[in-house]
Image (cartoon, rainbow, N blue to C red):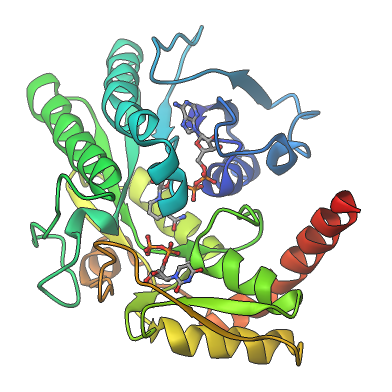
Length: 319
Ligand code: NAD
Ligand code: UDP
């Protein structure tokens, strides 16, 4: 049975990846320090003999006994409010954490995939973004702690590939959504869903003309699985090309949720908020035969029940 170590396993993407690898017949070791994740996301996996959980901060030396075939490094605060609150942990998990895991991969002769991000392109001057675009990042702005950690992570991973011959994969993930996102993580979709369900104002930052391209989690997981099994060591964009303005997104969510009290509540645009973002996925299509299958309409429909339940639980706990 091949074994995969998934860091950030108690988080949104790490838990969905754990499900997928279990379903593919892998033994999964999930590692997490619960900084932004929750055991609720993996409670259903805990009884399985194929799943093991290690509570550990990967920025500290990482030890795993026995053989490892693959490592997927997904541990990191991922939402702007999380990495603004935890700038040092964010820098450490992208740098020291990545170094520790690359060392582990080398010792075990495992193949390592890292979760990079569209944020390496910063506030992009090229649109859509191709993998060969070097980006427009402010290293000392508030988002710099995340963007530069991820850029360093890519450089470090490529160095282990080039100098140690380690098998490595780099996925540049564009905005992804689905069940198990944290209700109050501040990302736009949990914010809009919870506000619409509660009949509150949807906090549109700026004039809402900035764009994002949202990918449903199952499509992302499929792309990552295919990339891991491919033989391509350079970065690959995985995301949905269907671009929308944030204002349009707010309107779609209000319409889907159908609470007549929901309305728009305009707020200032955060510093260095990228104005546009859309992946060029030509490479993923060619290399992996991958393209997203779930439309935004369908993905939002599939995600809504999770948020209705999460809001109901959170509101019941407040009483
Ligand atoms: P998340 O916050 O839900 O999950 C991150 C997990 O990492 C959490 O469970 C957290 O507790 C854990 N973690 C953080 N620091 C750790 C440490 N030092 N040691 C061990 N565990 C630690 O976020 P997510 O959306 O699932 O993102 C997962 C990864 O994917 C991140 O690396 C993120 O940068 C990347 N990514 C996500 C998106 C997206 O749209 N969701 C986009 C681009 C990149
Ligand atoms: N955004 C918003 N209202 C919110 C949260 C986010 O208008 O309550 C905007 C944010 O300014 C950005 C976009 O939605 O332009 C996506 O933000 P998110 O934090 O989800 O991720 P980002 O792509 O910026 O990392």
